Length: 403
Image 1 (tube, helix red, strand yellow):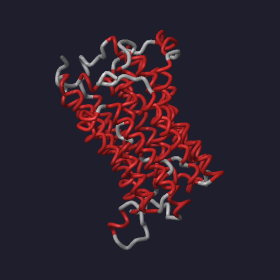
Image 2 (tube, rainbow, N blue to C red; image 1 turned 90 degrees about the vertical axis):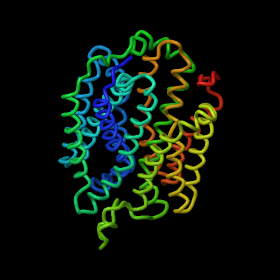
Image 3 (cartoon, rainbow, N blue to C red; image 1 turned 180 degrees about the horizontal axis):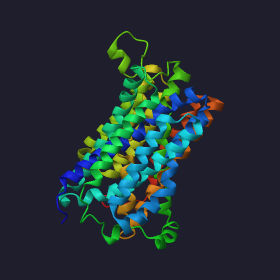
Image 4 (cartoon, rainbow, N blue to C red; image 1 turned 180 degrees about the vertical axis):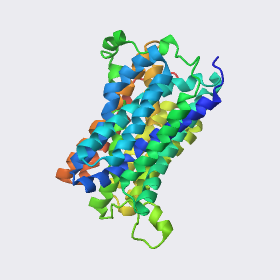
């Protein structure tokens, strides 16, 4: 039975708040970077690529180091990379440097998430684990929701979008100080949850593992591929202003509040976080497999509605799509883990590596947007949601109802 480490638990809440904000603000940063550096949509999509490709290269090494060193050194290194990456974004005067710093931030976030996920279980009594994990995810969602509002306030006050990263850097330095003085004794993971290299080959020949790794790949790709291009979609399809804030407005409130496209991005992430907090009771009543089917279908349907609807319908569709993405990742992830009596640690590492889908799908979406328009481009994440829906219908993972 783990000791109660409520202070450290709150530090982890702050860590997830920080990386939720830094990660998901990319959807409103990419259009700003495209404008500043005169980029194509493909080149803008490489910002998401450089961030999420870090999961491919660093999830497994971080898992192996976690078994050897414990969580604290990896969290400290991860947050340090986030802090200095954000700081150098403030001074980035070239697209190449911006890509490099985005990758560094991605490596830091990967380390924090890979080390932090198993740590949560050891910071309180076991019966509070689900509640604490839900709160952790909730704080991540709050950060994601607030990011576009914070950027709008920065832009509305006359500062460049890069100034936002100074705020992120300061938040990371505060977090770094809290981690440095925190006590991590007794928080090592059990042997069964550890990653083992020798198990990879066996698991990669298992059809269920392969199908559900692609499920994570396509889900994260669909999520990031949608949110990253909402602003550009509104510009190209509905001819709205892509400015994050109404900096020319005479009203202070209008200056610091996000414009419609940026607001839709915020609502996408905010409703996703809300869905994660309220879906527990729904899952208990209807069962995980049924909810996976319903939510994946509705996420796909609402995205298509947003793509082909009027401006108002698009705004509602994109925002509501966020709500129905809320439990897709956790259901695909948990269904895979629940299907095996062993190898959980290695399977978890493989699934986290598959988050690299968030690197490739936004780039593909941007390329299609350059060549065929943003309306057709948004069909790329729609196809990815379609895979998750098909997985919910025909996948063989086991859930709590034993099916």
